[in-house]
Image (cartoon, rainbow, N blue to C red; front, side, top):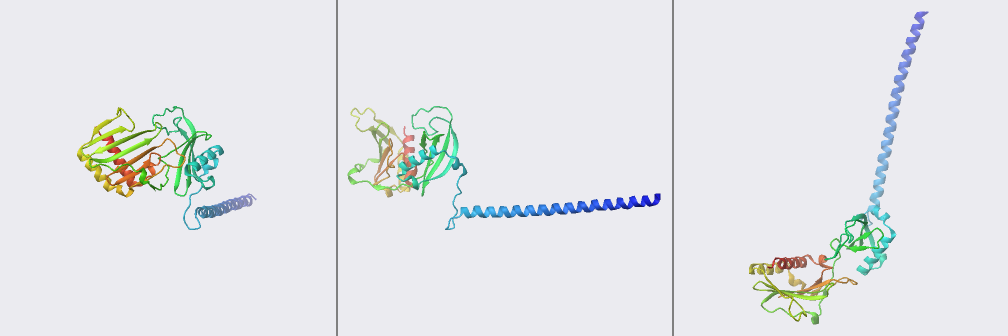
Length: 299
């Protein structure tokens, strides 16, 4: 009897052990099946999602288009309206034609939204706000605002707007240069509204006077080496300054307090303003830069 019970328990233990092993194998297999299924579903979902994003990012002509910035969805309506109105006035375009390309929350380091004008006093308090980019075609304007849009400023350097020059009427052209003068700059406008004339002579003298100064009290005479004068003349030729002969790059309609610069060489005259300076043709920017560097080096 004992022998039979012993054999029974041994057989049962063997069966139980075998059943446990079989159960474990089935569990592992089931787990692998679930993992495989989940992995396949995840891959399928990722592929479908990627395809949907790709479809949304491709224009009918096959070109990629930028996906909308999610942050712009949280842009307060007051900021959006203020920026669009300012951009519409600046670009002379209806608001319906403008698009907010990008909107990012920013904390500006001063009360001027980090865009202070010359000699402007700015509070040093931190100002939470937004950096908003508005665009139409190839033109983009970058605005700094506070949280509500009640304060906003245009970031000229970060904005880009192709300029279209117009011909300067003959009646508005300044007189041609006499032989002993190499270059002339006439600046007018700004907050003060005064007009200054700066001329560079062949011998290196740089003379600046205020037009209308009866006592000639603001006259200044400085000098640069003759070699530097010759170098400047060569830079004008490299920048093809003559191709801008008698052209005017006007300020955007509605702009105020800007300074107009009229530059004249022996080959012609060009006019631009400080608001649009960064959007001038590259060659003309190079000529303006060379002139400003020469003025800064004069002693």
